[in-house]
Image (tube, rainbow, N blue to C red; front, side):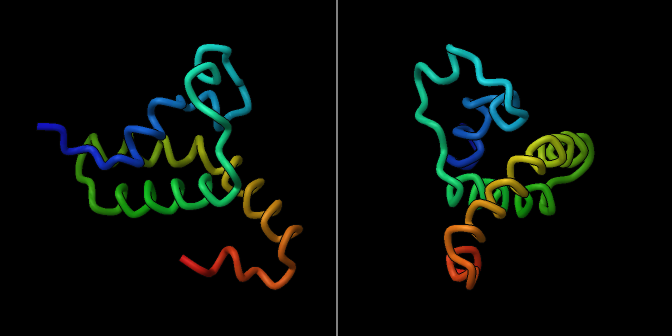
Length: 92
């Protein structure tokens, strides 16, 4: 039984290299680039998932979260530039 949430499978499919800016042809051949909102939502979902995890799983989850932080911050900045009031960031 696969217990990973759908967003996590999607996140892993893109690969951490996507969030680090290292786009690979194979990653982009099967996936379209994520929007800023999708990056933010995926990051928040991953953060919530990490908080619930335990042991080595938790440590590995936070390592992935740390690697995704740069893209998350950039996405938040793009969203702020798009909507100065920040309503897109606070609405979930």
